[in-house]
Image (cartoon, rainbow, N blue to C red; front, top):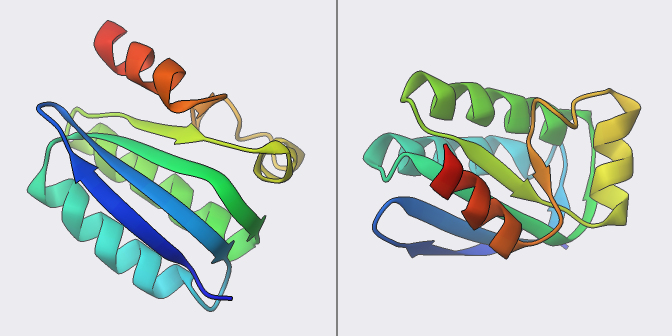
Length: 114
């Protein structure tokens, strides 16, 4: 299964809900599409990865690059995770940098306080 998703745009944030696999196969398209949407704005991004089945090192690299891109635009990247995604991110000790959140509501609160 490849990576699929939807995008919602609100006043000050974009919400992407993704399903499938964030791996070496899907990473180039993921990076290109989301990178372009971050540049378009709004600058705060919520990535809902709670329905993602698998993330590999290519996917992690793309998440780090997108977080840096959002920061450069004075925005934020909030990542809503599930147990598999959280475990993978914690293995490489990126949980704080990638701003992992338990749900979309917590991510929205983080945006409001930033």
